[in-house]
Each structure stands twice: as structure tokens, then as C-alpha cells.
Length: 416
Image (cartoon, rainbow, N blue to C red; front, side, top):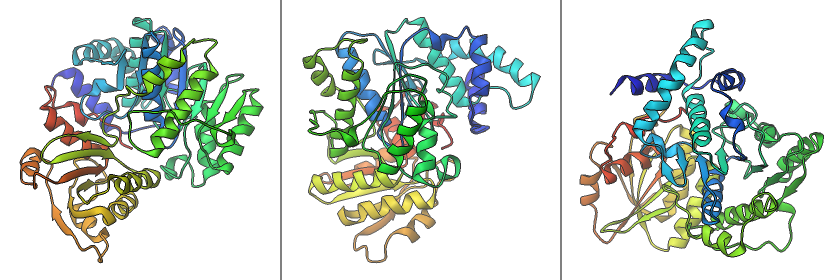
């Protein structure tokens, strides 16, 4: 591992420290690149990655040069920062780290803990990349929450909140209203905000905050006669995400003109790995990162629609999340193979075993992250393997499928 990556990996190991103060100090020292392109800012418990990818695809189909910032990645660190669909190469990452590091080191020397975190470093890097490429529009996905997220230093053209559910409660709050307040922190004075199918309690919070900032508020939950456009992504929830993306584009079409035909075409060309991603083969594989209750509900719906029993490979961070995913897959699994992910807070195999219901009639087995391909070859060729739970398990498997040229890539993840 070279010195640049060692430095970046060290920031990641220090964990997360939420707040925008460090970004507000860092960005002027970099020339405020975040002010040099228009932005659509997207927050939400679930669906924000899908909606961001849909918006990226729609606007690129309409001929715009688009920057996309998302997290986490599956295999390569550069997946987080894309321009016109191309990920940031390792060489380019090293270039930007060499630019930012002296400034970050000086900030840290002035006061311990005042230097940027790993996620803040990646956010600043995205701003520099988008400014350098002179993108027509940047789509920014928040990392966690909204009010204190490192992306919340922009003045967007549109703010979107996809969904609100109980997740990351120790950080964001223990009620729907508290979490909605944190997510709605991305709303800026006078900037329109569009929400997805939020619970009424959450929508009331968002609408009130939008009103206090004279920001036009609209919610999919209150619309009538909504059309759910076609998308190449699987699941009823993706139909809802497509409708939200479609309405978002129409909301600002006077600023960013689009055509109906190319909106629809863009929605059928979305690339989103690790979300019910089907890989043909013998056996077939479905990769579906699922890490909270809302995601578990969607996973169960997709398994029901798939229509046949599957072999489930599962790993999770935290017992609460593990229980939700295990309960979702049990009715459809003939075998559940458990993995201990190489991440902090990973559930051990012994813990996962205890969480499998005693009335499960299928096989419970143990897997290892070191030799995925060998384990795939041992499965009946006519079967389907569903790899689910933590995104880290999905990323590990994908990296081995791809035989990535940069195997370090999937280790650079956020401690969420």
C-alpha cells in the first residue's frame, strides 16, 4: 500500500465525526469548488442511492455532463466519484489527496481533531473533480443524515428526501420526527424540496421546516394519479424511486430542459450494482445489499416475486439489522450460509446462528470471505444464490468476481 492510501486508510480508521465546521474551513482553502456547479442534493433513509443513479442516467441521456457523488462503494474507492459514469481512477485519487493533504495536516496541527475525516476528504475531492471537469450538474448523495453531513455545504437547485425510517438512531434520533428533522437539514432558503412517500409525521416536520425557509414543498405522498415509469431496476420500491426521480426532473426542467422520451430512456439504463443485481450463471447469483428494516421489507417482496427457493449467503453489522434480514429471507431459503464480515461491529457466525429461527427447516452452514469463488463452484448449478445483508459482504464477493486490479479498494468504507 503506497503512502497516499495509507494516509487515507488511517483517516477511515479514525472513524466519523459529524458536523460541517471542518468542511466550512477546508473548502475556502481549496478555492470553494462546491460553488462552481449546480447541485441536486439527495437525503433519505433508503432509496437515495437509487434516485441519485436514476437522475444521473436521465440527465446524461439528455446530453448533460453529470457528476455523481455517492457512498459507500462496493469494490473500488473511485466508484464514489463519477463524471459521465466514469469512476475516479486510483491515480486521480492520489493526485487529489496530494493536493488536499497539506491543507488538512495544517488544520490538524492548529487544533487536534479539526482536520477532515475520511468522508470529508472524499467529499472535498468530489467537489474538486466536478469543478475541474466543469460538470453541468452534480448529483450529491448525503452520507448520513443531512443537517450535519459533509455534503451540506452547497446551495442546491433542488433538495430531495427519499424516505424516512428508523435507522442510525444513536446518531440521528429515536423517533421518525427526530430523524426527519436531521434529514431535512439539507433544505436551504428558497430552494424547492420534494419528498418521497414519507410517513405523515415525517412529512409534517419537513413541510414545517421548508415553510420556515420559504422553500416550496411538494410530496409524492400527497400527489394523485401518479404514473410509475418503467425502469430496469427490479422491485416495486424502484418503481416508486423512478416516479420520484421523474417528478424531480420535471420540477426543475425550466433550468435543466429535458425531453419526455429521454427521461424514460434514461430510467431504463440505470446502472446500480448490489441492489437486486442479477448475475447469470450456473448457479445464478443475486446481489442485494440490505442493511435495515425498510430494506428487509423490500428484500422479502423481491424474494416473493422471484418465485422459487434460494440459497442465502448472509453477513451483517449489528444484531438488530441481522434479525431483520434473517427473518426476511427465512420463508424463501433452502439454505442459509452465514459469513462474518471483516469489518468492525460485524456479527460473529455464532451470533448469527442464534438469530436463525428454531423452526427453520433448511440447512444452516458457515462460509468464509476468503474463497467465495470456490464456494460458488460447490453449489448446485441449478440453484440461485442470494448474497445479502451488509454491503461489505456484497462488495467482497464482487471484488473476487471481478478479480479487481485494486484489491484494496473495498477496504475503504465508512464506519456506519
